[in-house]
Image (tube, rainbow, N blue to C red):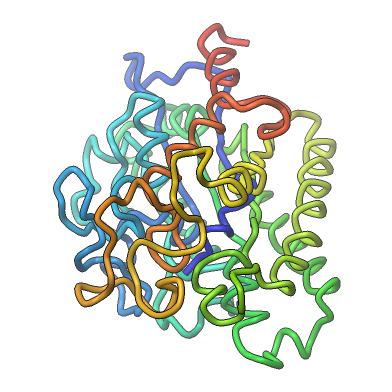
Length: 367
């Protein structure tokens, strides 16, 4: 599962700067999501995996008050972005309800536990690795072509918004999973980061090949500050030094890679959302944003409520809006809302070269 602070980082959206028409009718923008538990909305419900959020109290503040597979007390990042772009929430790709006109809304391919590397998250057994998520996207394109024709399908894909977030699990659930892990014996941290960046570049290239034309890339954030890490490694609430060092090495190289891709393509296809900065704002000063704590999870057990999964037997806070973290790794709905607000309207310190509102405005006038 991804570290909330894995979310940290840089989010991937794909937008075309043209209106989308389906069968000659002006249509709402489709939305596609790739990545890990920070953006999974239920695909793992259909898999034989331990990385799942399909039992209470997950979903306690969701409109239905029921668990859906989202690693949140309520709405997650994709839900909130769907609201902002005026589309209904997209369905998990594995949902049997994703058919007919529902396909034209988009799809969520994300799967809790995955990383950039295929060996990340092996302990979760069955998950949809990034390579498979992209395979499913190709399959999706075929299904839509059968429904509305190849030309209109291309318009749908090119005009869509795409969100991708992955990378944190490659540290939390791979390199640092156990002392002297296979990857840590294989690579020094600096060489491992370089390897991750090269593999992430391949994923982004494939997204572009499949039709992505404005992509916002997410990396990792302060991975060492999640309640799970504090519970295991902190004495007085300080963040884990090694994971913080990993984030400090990884994120600048990710931005450099994104800039290089844009230069190669000749356009600002990839747009960086600095989720690390977004998170650090309320991690370091939670009271300013209306939180009482950024160290203790709302739901969990043990120190900082950071041990194990959130279950019906866990400690559960009464007011989820007072907590940055919902469970040991994942943000509360309120924290998600703050992040999405910055994605929409944040300055260049948060969004580069432009925020989502600017992109949508440019799109509306055909720039």
